[in-house]
Image (tube, rainbow, N blue to C red; front, side, top):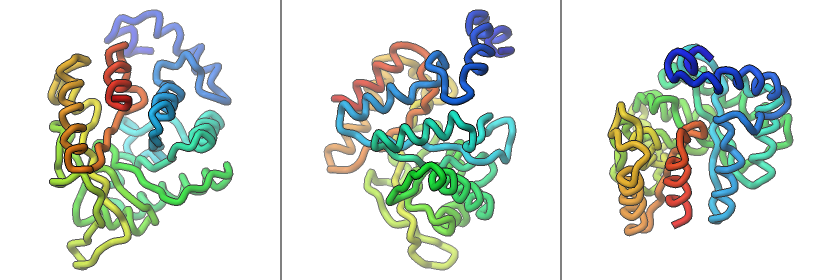
Length: 251
């Protein structure tokens, strides 16, 4: 509420926020501006795509991690809907887990336990690190030891493209033990805020932003690779954002 009033001068949103929260006890209210889950799933289903939705299951930095707990009824309901519609549920480890294997394992177990309670079963479990935080000597082995199938963290926050030098999934390799891990690395080619946000490329919600995303998509297609796109469910600030995403998944 404070941000709506003091920063954005959006008094209507400030008044709506308590009402939305009060009416979101069992499911996320349709009027919640961050509730784009149904729209995202519909666009995936219209184009025969399976999307993955990653949940934060810990709080190692209260200023940067989620305000929800995955056990909340409305989050459980969302997980059930995602699963019933054929999409994937994954892990988004909290901010300070990248160098803390025990915490990654704890959060992974928490997610799987909730899914088990809800009758949700998957062949693989993946996700990506919060803020793309990564320590090559620690993080990927922590994912493998936590029983995770794949990680999709490896991209640069300030530049989209091929941090791993490829758009093909490959086995993780532990440099400390000189051994291949059971974990697969799924390179992240582009992230919404990397291209759009002012603090990074700053292309905004424009045709230039769409062109940058589409250029990377085309490069992946040229070699038969996978264009892995990360789009935050709450990163839709205007109609143009919806249009960019729609064009990317449907063309």
